[in-house]
Amino acid sequence: MENYLYHRWPGAEEREAGLRARAALERRRRWVSGVWLGLFWAAIAALALSAALMWAAEHPGGAGNMPGGRDPETPVLSEETRLPPAEHGVDLRLEFAPAGEELLTAAEIYPKVLPSVVLVEALGIEGMSTGTGVVLSADGYIITNYHVIEGSATARVSLLEGGGEYAASLVGYDAPTDIAVLKIDAQGLTPAAFVSSQELKVGDTAYAIGNPLGYLTGSMTDGIISATSRTLTVGGYSMTLIQTSAALSAGNSGGALVNDRGQVVGITSAKLNVPESSTEGLSLAIPSTVVRRVTNSILAHGELVTPALGILCYQVEDPAAGILIQEATPGGPAEAAGLEPGDIITAANGSPTPDLEALREVLDAAGIGGEVELTVLRGEETFTVTLTLVDQDTLE
Image 1 (cartoon, rainbow, N blue to C red):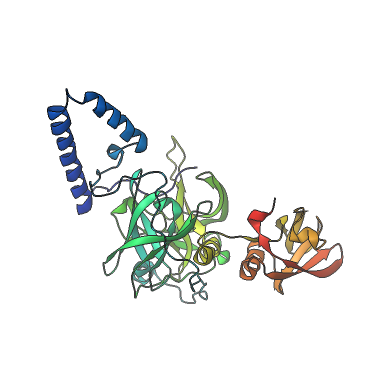
Image 2: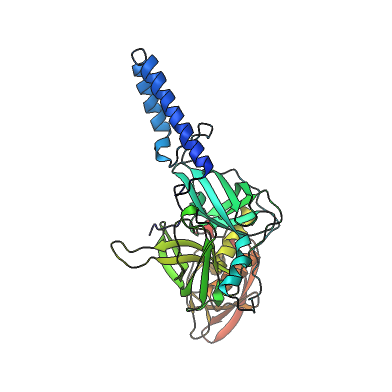
């Protein structure tokens, strides 16, 4: 499924910058026509052809593939172009707020959440893409989807409330989970309140706030949680997503999926459309538990770094709620500690592990090189082992 929600053209109400770029492109075309065809046609036709071929090879697609044109002062982009980097290793983490106690109406939720939602615009080889972002911190860290800024050379973030437009740099990203963290030079922003998506139930009220089509900024739609854990292939990656009936459109990517307390439970990301069908597309969002894990790793390392036990596993409820080891990776920490297929991990560092997300939270908190004490059930015997976590990428 390739149905990401970013928007690849300026929209019906083009920005002034887009108009300037198109006018500049037309001036450039007239200059090329007048000079090359008028003055040098006979003298250097062969050189012109050679130069044109070389330019085409170096700049596949050309300016004509960039909706709205390109300003001559904007550098020609390539597939290797990336946003300017921002510092990682910062003292900042996404933490969940306590679950809200007060049920809010849609009219109350909107002004509460809107200051934490931004417009993201990125210029890349395929043109201008527009999406949405969610404010992580008062000093300008922004969460969005990776596919919104993928391959871009420049990006800017615009506040939806209070105005203000800022150049953005890239802290880091993780393509498989479609999360990216941007940094803008701003102060006094309103961070969104995130809560755990694990508390969601099918039928819960849900709201989406974002920028459909890139110019219908600050739009809000409502619906319910249709499924809490829907595994699909998006952009070539297997992702477990929240499904909601809240309507999403191009431009909503990176926006906020909000509960009925005005707290963010997910980042809107994709929509599944059925070809040649009148069925409405299925709206999808990245669960906040995944957003927190990936965002915190990006803030610390600039990328997703995964502490691992060295096991293949799945969660079970019988005979005891926990994580069943299907296979211990040869040479990994679990095998070295004597763990075997069929063992059930029921706790880690004293915290129960009834599901994979609970175990992942303990591993992420310990980090690579950290020690984790596991409580293990083998048959009717319970015992503990202590392992040192390794980088997932080092395991075969």
